[in-house]
Length: 444
Image (cartoon, rainbow, N blue to C red; front, side, top):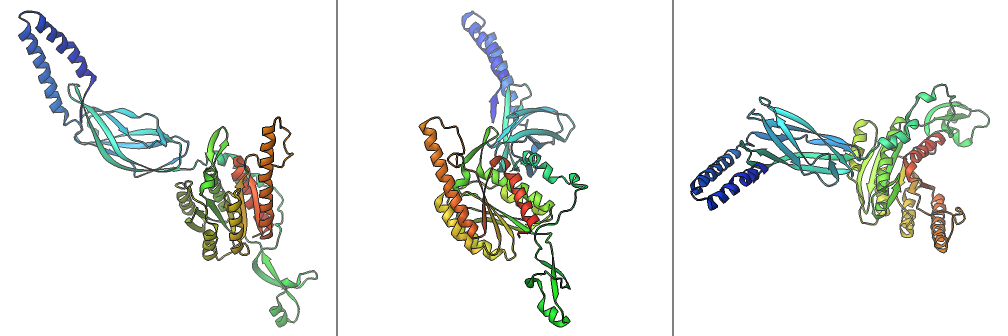
């Protein structure tokens, strides 16, 4: 597309308008004014003809996959191929999604002569995780005389992957990842005896009868006791809910985010901690159906696979189906594992559905249910700042909500399920502490 530049408008205002006025008002100056104006129009038309070749040989190349982190500036490497090897000024821009804020909307680049490839770095800051695409690059080059600008768009292909920002969370739990502070600490015996059979030994008075190996005792003619070793590698699954209640916004450090955003970030941090502790980490995401399933493993490639399942996960306006989820877990997970549910159960109907569905898997697996502490869900007299009748009714409503959650906790405990209300700001650290407590007590 050919568009006029400011220079063309300036020359028209300096040449055409004054000479047209002179030719119309001064006798004998008409032909001179017409010649000057005609020469200008010939130059403008010739410049327009030459401008059609200004973008020939220009090709923009972007990386196929670009990985950024939410709320952190990222760099997009742009390569400009100049096949004609002539120096020129090139204006370039991209149509970024509204979730990605570029440092500048467009840039003017000077392509040096005899340089086939030029490279520029384009800085942008994504404010929402997800998968985005750049499909067009928009170019503009000036004509030789500068009267016109030739504009064109080129197809490009770049996938922008915006992952959760784990930088701040890792700073908050950095002490849990450091091991140098454990030098010189006395070893403490873990509670429990483990479940993995290790060897047989002679019976010692005080050994429990359920630890006696009766067949070996019959062969040897005296009691023999089984010895178990503490399990070092366990399977940990984080089960992330992306249904309607996880879309609720919460205020955190002066900004607003969603409950699902906190679940995704904390789940990835827990995966790092579980791998450092020698456990295998798995992932399940669901809403009204099971969305993704990654079997528990370890290693960087496996962690990247879990991250790829989570960075495109967004809240959906549907009701979670806990029965289908528990049936899926029952069929797929044969080995006993630690299941950490990140969900919201402050809706009585959802709480009742979850309590019934977990009966299918509560005997086989160890289940921890974690939800964010609802705002105001506290005992009635836990806060003295009540100044008017509105505060009183607000406290009463919070007390009723807290009481219902306590009833749900009692129901789940009878099924062997533990419910915890966690602080949104310390969610990752509290999940890591729960996992460490399970390993220390050998509950799994």
